[in-house]
Amino acid sequence: MSMSTPTVLELMRRDLEDAAAHLGKLHDLRFKPMFGGLMAWLDERPCAWLTPAGLALKLPPADQPALLQRDGASRLIARPGAAPSRHYIVLPASLCHDTPALATWLARSASAGRR
Image (cartoon, rainbow, N blue to C red):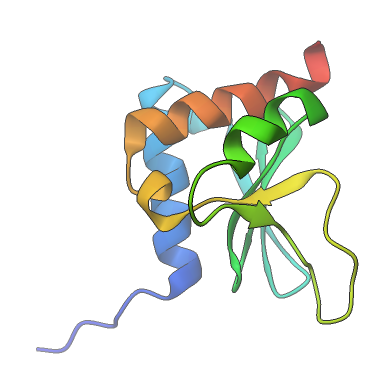
C-alpha cells in the first residue's frame, strides 16, 4: 500500500483551508493554478499566493510591518530577478502551521479591499 506524498503546494493549501475553516469561510475559499503556484481567493478577492517560495498573503501596507517583523517573513519575489512584491508577504512556516494565528492574518487579507 503506497500513499503519495503531498506536495509543498498541497500542504500550504491545507494550512490555508484550515485557517479559512477556522473563520467559518472554507466554502468561500477558491484556488486556481497560476504562475507555477496556486492563487487563492476568499470572498472573491485575491488573498494569497502559494508558491515554491512559500505561502504569501496579500496585505495592505498598514498590516505589512507587523508581519515583516516576524522571523522568517519576507516580501515575495515572484521570479528570480524580480522586484520584491509590494503586496504579498511570505509567511514563516511556524505561522502557516498555527491555524488560529494564520486565520487572523487571513481575515486581515480578506478585509483589505473593504477598508
